[in-house]
Length: 76
Image 1 (cartoon, rainbow, N blue to C red):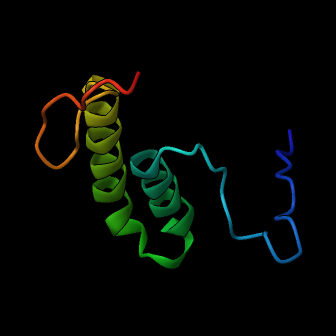
Image 2: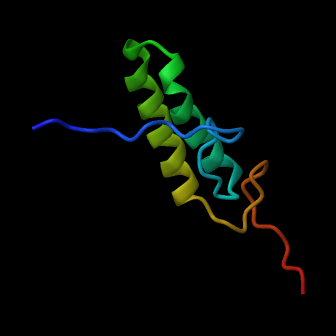
């Protein structure tokens, strides 16, 4: 069986990946999108770093201050 891969999209946003609105996650997806420019031998390290960063993002308190790790005050 021949496996077909879709062609890369053309246009001004072809190199941009999805945007989540969460800076840490968007940085991870950008690093993965940039893998095509890196040697294959570096891919494992990029995926491991991406996994670690995504794990930290999922484990973090969404209301905490990323600089201090403390909860941000409620704005009522």
